[in-house]
Length: 130
Image (cartoon, rainbow, N blue to C red):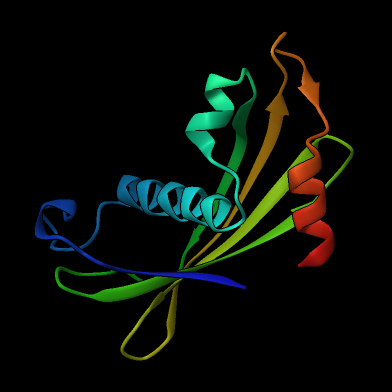
């Protein structure tokens, strides 16, 4: 299982002193991109080659709030949902006590150079080995 460690920055918090809910989407996207890079899939290079990995659905269940200075980590696993859909199953945990803060599921597809959904072999191989 892939894991990335991060820290909450003050400016990511709202007036209530907790991480703004929209910021969690940024955390999750960063973790997905790093997960792909560790599996030799360069998001930018794919885009330049005409292959676009697109998010079509995001589900987030908020369990608790991160606060300024919290160390946290995100786990990522990949599941194949259909011939063309892939699910990134992600969890955000506060590092000091491993408390689950957010559960997320991001569904994505690959679009070919013509903009049509297509199976994407590198993700197929990743979902078979995980």
